[in-house]
Length: 248
Image (tube, rainbow, N blue to C red):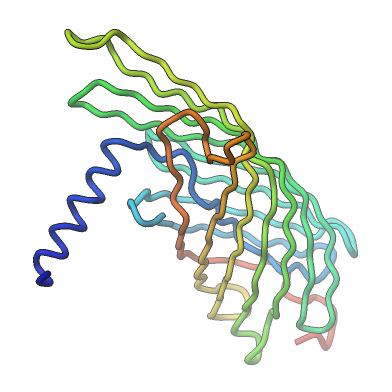
């Protein structure tokens, strides 16, 4: 197969997937803060793209060190008329100079909407997501100009998926629903570079889902898929960068 024919085949294949299946979920990439101390406030704004089918969105994350060990976080993203996602989380952190270990438990809610103008088909995805996330990294290396780290989120997706098709001359109206819980695992990598307060940030996220229905199918009984990859880029501002003397 020639290169040109390969790309034509790939485009047709992706198009057929989108026409027959709808996107129910994508990795939810919130900024991993690496909070070091009480009073540290970090704000992030980003734009993201999920693959392989190109669901673009804008997002923001705010994280705060409420005590010497307790941190709180809020995250939200929006992908236009299709929908979005938001979560609130609380966790603990421990810093060893520039190394940080932090863990969060949280609760998220989100959804998407897909329409086919040609057939009139409408697909809506709504879900609740209780989760736990563990993160580790280094903040302020290279004289305060680089942060880097990894994290992993585990949780259970409680979906409410509805696939509606209007009546036609050949077929009556049909509604299919899926509410089977889905297990979720999301590893994430991030890299930040810039000044001590303002940094450019890059995040890479991956989602792996497992169905809990008897047949172990993800989104059992409904023609829906999920996007496994997300990449986002943006800026992060840290309002309190190591107020204790001698940390940097």
